[in-house]
Length: 519
Image: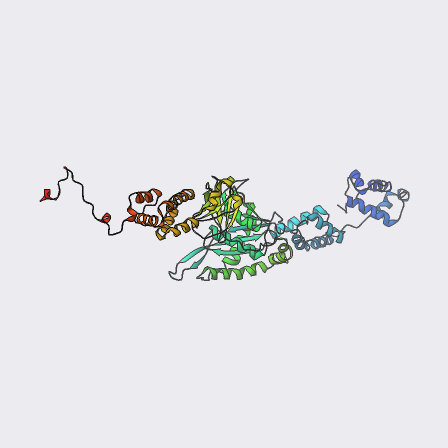
């Protein structure tokens, strides 16, 4: 300690070493005293303006009188501590800035208050203050680094206007690590659409994107839990890609990983759930409007034992540290599995439309992720194709670079071309081609069937082929073999009045008794 008294022998040793040019650090090590104690006696040595030889001639009593310093008043200690504690709210806020450390802030403090605490005591008092302000605070989060999200365990409810029944709703909570700025929204479920919708609204509420989003092990967030490499759902990965952020699931059985958001949930119970307990809401919109009003007051209210609010820290420290939002708001996407056909296309069954992928993925299982306007195709979480969504049945959207030279035939022939060709033959031929395209599952199979039927027009003409298609439509048989059978038997030339539609007479045979047998 700076005020520790040492004996006269050590004082003489200290001054001798100092006059010989030994550093204060070495002096303190050799004599087993603190640097502050060494500084104090060296300062008194300069203050009295005596040489070392003059000091040596003095008796121990004279030296004791000369270097005696009054003990520090306890009230001075209290004032120094109170002075430091008054700075803690500022220090806490500054530590949230990127690159700011405790040591850097201590240097600023000691420059301004030279008689203040040294670094170890400075940190000790700060830790004690943190425990009083927030007993669960162990991690100092940097601005713009992490957003923690979770759902409350307890639920709010709305009332069905028609039945009068109470319907429970989920409550989504997100909190920025550095500022504690909180977002809350009620949703009908914790499903994919509601979860990603709440995440989107949260980011636009903050007006920026953090470096990482920390989620609990929700089914809509984590496909497979793992201590080191959890598997994130495709939809959440796509969301993270759109906003250029990272998903960090918490570890199972590690409550400290999500202590911040769980503490926020407890406060939400007090600040939002409790004030709304006597109110009745008949729609989700009305409930969220009430939550929004309470949330604003919560974020703007000064924190306990601090002179600033969460919104103050957010505006001053964290908002500018967030990454900018993308130009377009995230559109919820759906995901389906598919196999790449030999035609180097995948089939999106919802739209009955085909989209091309690079031919090297033929036969591979891929994920098709589609939104209102776009279709993206992923293989092993890597995007291999992107298309604008086309709502045209039985048509192909093809990028020529995706196709190998051996499949140029398939790029030239497509459903719309076959339908157009059938229309040129006749009305019934067009209908028959459409039926074939609908019935056949593999495009190459349907193309070959259509090509075989339409090619017959060169031999028999459009009229006979159209009549044959009309007859086949009545049979509800859709194949090249059926058309050929009709043509070979000449059934295409028959009309509805022909004998073909009359009951055929049975052939004569000795085992056939005939009508007279039963008379």
